[in-house]
Length: 394
Picture (tube, helix red, strand yellow):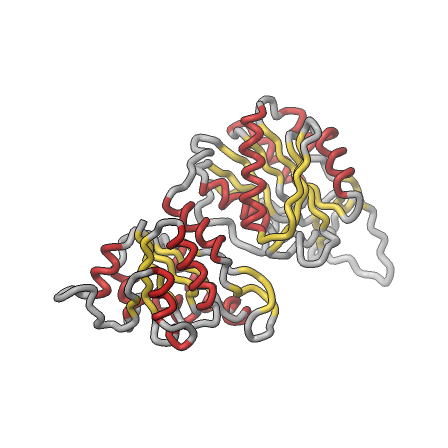
């Protein structure tokens, strides 16, 4: 496989050296194209030593006599990976600018292009960068999401380039999607529910929907057809989702689940459905110094699905703050599920509203597996692996 590795100017260039080395060791022919700023962090000679191939960093470098570098390089590649991709390079590609060898090669490319963002958290979260990434996704570019942690500038947040081994996996999945779930239909729920109190207030929880969306992305990578029932989420549903149904409260979630489950092979209940809702809902804003709010139990959607699922697989998520494994095992039995994915949302840095998670997977027959803290995309990969095995065990 011919990999064209584009390297733009950022401190994450050192990871690109490890990426080039890892790809070369796997038998890939790696050709590196660098921006001028990238050469300030890592010399072209470093990449040449790692890949055993010439490195290109000037617009008018010739691949061979009478050849135009950016055209020839684009034609020779099976995949192009830009790692790190700075905010500047992402913006230029999104708007079709081609003022150096790297961006010109991208514009001439007809192969899959993988973008690996790396930048300060504030730059990553800036509306311009988010919009540029959305533009690229809409054009079919693959975005290998950055990780969260301490950045080179000392800030803490999202923006750290994905690790080399994660990018290698991302390349493999882009070029050779397993298709192991081709033909399977999934119903996935994600996000939280909002139970109205009065005309302006409601009860909800801290669910962001990130875990459910990561599950959807992983299922789509494997060829599944996915319907997403989305509650209150802080992220947009993945663009590749086949069908998205928006709901607000637990009653709507139940109604949609019961309406849609019959046409699926597996139900994945990743949503954080509110356990309670106000017994009385007021049309106008409640006023007064002291207000007593009486709550009633919401319907148990997982249990309802467990009673009617038939041969379908039912996977439920269990967010707890104590007695994690014991609570998960009890829910597995009581709700008629085939698998439960449990996480301790009291632990800092994982679970609700985080980009990372750590889970315990429990199945019928006493099976148990623990997956330590990692990005939700990685946890989703491991969870979907476990889901696939449900059919092997049948």
